[in-house]
Length: 88
Image (cartoon, rainbow, N blue to C red; front, side, top):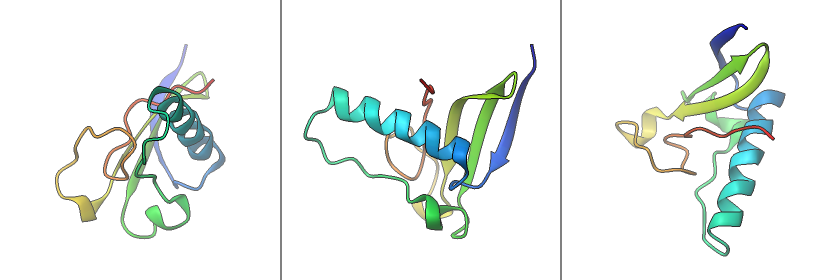
């Protein structure tokens, strides 16, 4: 079993997969809530860092930090920090 964390562009296929899984989960849990989404097309170019944890080359978790939001927080769904989004 190989586990590794890689920095990737937020618009990569694996990042989009994990973000969609997180957004779907948040939508199901908080029906009707307004969720602050990460904008993959501009996130990395604006200085954001997007990390993906891989288990045997399968993306399983993600996290992101934006320099524009101050210290990273654990607010799920905000562009300042993307907590564990399990790919389904």
